[in-house]
Length: 597
Image (tube, rainbow, N blue to C red; front, side, top):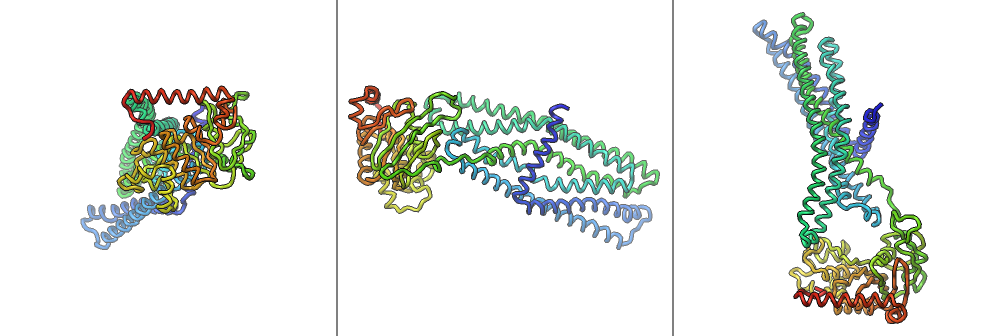
């Protein structure tokens, strides 16, 4: 047996599992839609019987005898009208409730994806492209439910085929066989089609996720792209991704086009065969003209439902591709929240890292971990974390902040809230107020006080709408230093007992930085501040310094002590100072702005 024939049962089982899983989310409206489809199916069979009755009792007698009783005409009209109203009611019920079921299921699936994304810790998100995750909560959910709307009609069509087949065979065996013979042909076409098209839809859905991730990344880095004149490169990169998606979809559409052409041809040929055989049966006196007309009429009515079954089967691979991608997120185990592993520190200690080791996922056995430290930070101190690039500074802050969990060892933290401010300050595309409160109820006095502590009150007061000024996506209307100060004010608004700053003051000028740290000392006397620093001015303001290199604590003490006793630390700080001097000379010579705002 070949691979494709082996895959067919598994695809059928996967499709059945998908439908069961989706329908189980909102079974009631779906059941009502199926009921409406069943009424329509039975009404369709009844309409063919009505046509037969009218032809045999009204039309033929009128031609043969020249007259028909009024009561017979009225009966025929009433019969067709009632059947038509019943069929119409079935259609309305089916369409309304099928739509309700599909969009409710789409909403629930989307909520399930978002809930699982929210439940996963930061480390889980860092391993996956944002755009791809957004696609799974959007276009993949839409793809997964796209097959649902026509399913009730398909169930009604199956009922219609069964009842029609029985009626056709009972009414006249030769004509019935001609009509019923087409059904296995259509089933065979659908099986062949699914084998061919399944992989193309799966491939297309994966390419769509990759394209979404690429577009998201390009939008996020639009300033970088324009600054380096890389528009053509980005256009080419995204065009390549879009080309792969287009090619996969074109291949699927070609297969689908061939399949739909065959769906047109087979019923048309069957109709011609029915007329030919039926004419001979009428001539032989085996059937009446009304019976033949009802045969042709019923089979003509069956053509569209039969095509709809084909449409459903053609849509299943597309929906399966979306469903698999949705389930990959929804069924993924929620990784442990690193914050839950943080233990309470003993009195007088704000942070304690006990034999903490952290190695990034995929690190080879025996390789040096990103961090291997054992240290303690007393309560109420301002501690600077200093070290060369790649030394483990940001990793240390993320461990203390509970964003990532240690590979070994334990993290201890004092009581009270913790706030973390990153070097790249992220602002939402709302107002200053929105970015400070993040949905919490705070008074204006509290907001202005946090802005004052972050040296941001003056420039916010000068804005056109003050706290209600819209900052634009990612705070684009603000300078780098302004964004950092708003982000710092957001953290200070929560009056943290532990404040973690990952090079947060890098965009501030030394005077503003000194004022900010002074405010922290006075207003938050009991707050412990751990700040990743790469500026001598910042380092000098700290109570003590942790010197990190190659993921280990090389030395720990006051700034002037480390400058005296550790040549590596002294060389690093002097390099920082030299770099600052060269940068200032370059800016001054080039006529540019200052280091701050």
